[in-house]
Image (cartoon, rainbow, N blue to C red; front, side, top):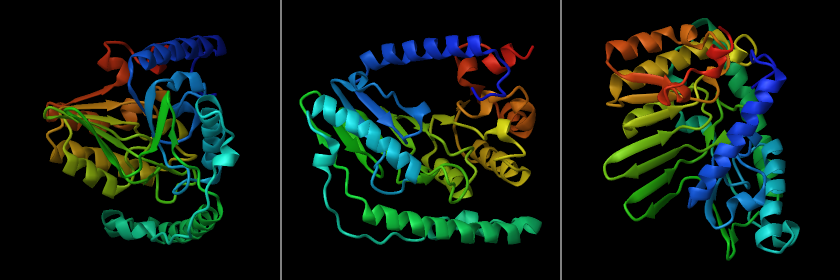
Length: 313
């Protein structure tokens, strides 16, 4: 709940406490936990929360920006000390240098998209982004390797690009994806697909939409029954989200509605942070109604009113 969120500090603090209580209660029932990246709103920092679990988490050694690497080190240090009785520094390993391909080579749809008058500016941004990426590669090759953790009361696996089978349930974690636009400076995440007895839930994590066309194409190929999207961060419109990228999101989500059998799309996290989010995505909601698809926030799925709308009226 960013500073502009239309609620008092007391309300925000109360909701934070309620959310943490709900997460802890859910955590007690869980056998497997997934951390898609190391932003503080995506994982609990208390190591005891993970006791007895299998933790599938973002690889901290590559496809990670500098700030998330530091957060990952601090988090995994806690886990190593709590469950491994060892300082993480003692567990670090040497690693071989590795070549990393230009990420744009895998973004075929994005690179074919016509950006009109914005095209030249986009090329400039991509050039700057590639230089930033090359600096990150140097970091990844210079850092010592943080290993996975195997202990009596906790197993940590780095899940990027891996699949896991648990009885009739399969969990697929994607290779690292940009946290928003191409070369987003806030780093990378992985998305998660959970399949069980013919049903498929796709949790996109923080793709900010998705903004990138190739990520929409991937979702279409997966054709999930339930799709959880973080939505564009419309509360940052005019600052970190411009009209061009908002239009990309709208077009991509409309493609998903048109080209999949997905019956339920849940917008969560970034989108319901400002009261006008439904107006800004009006084309999405209109198409969903026409196609008889359900597009809801997480609150609405639980038959509640989104807080941002509740406090704004």
